[in-house]
Length: 377
Image (cartoon, rainbow, N blue to C red; front, top):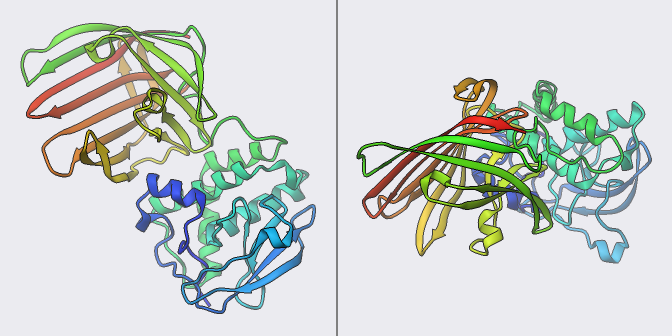
């Protein structure tokens, strides 16, 4: 009757999204938890996902939460295991069990339908991995949220609206096709090789820097892709710079994941346990996301925000590039005027062609900009 099992109890990906998205924007506007007593079934899907056998049945509590004891049932998360609100209770809503915390949402149902369509067209259900399905549900949630997706007057109209959003996003539809092949795809939806990994590639940047608003001085920085390193089980590309923002030699570690590109530099050095999002995929223009409201840096609390901008044509010394993505990562102190803001501009198949930084620490400021003058891949 127009309500669904929503994000009352966060799943693993929702814990991640809490770091990437404000909790209040992590679902369609207008969605509410189902009332207590709503029937939830744990089911085993057949080879096409088109029918299922019921393994167990439960009901939601007063907060819309439900649970099954998978150990006692002798099952574990997998692409042929699903939870569903069965037909007769409302419009059927399903979610593939990709982890031991899983929500049943309009997004999960739309992705379920899309996967079944691929299977009926010739793919195997088992060709989809848990990581790919998690990425698709999270990606659709981001796209629908940023596009201002609203719950319809009932579940059917909400699903129709989400299907329109999905069909209109080529990054997600292309990823669905890629995911229908056996094995996990190497890169997330809409990657477009924004961060090349060609070992030996060389970027020369012309830089300018100003301290405390004084005279601008120039410098040169050469950045080389010098191999890779496995960090937290993820293969990160090593970028070795000779004069990073005029501050001297520095190494940066960036890894592509199914949800975007993340900076693992602080994780590699041991100063942080979490990588930093620098380019979320699929790329959504005009996105503004609070990554963390209370990040501790040297004992000081900062609010961290990720922003994206419309695709643009950008000219730097190395040439003119089309479909450039521009992201801004800001960390603003919650108690002082200290801040740091980094703007990055990525060109498809070329990588980082420009980056700007502004910092304020204890009243002192530094602003610097690096633009590519030569790129050899």
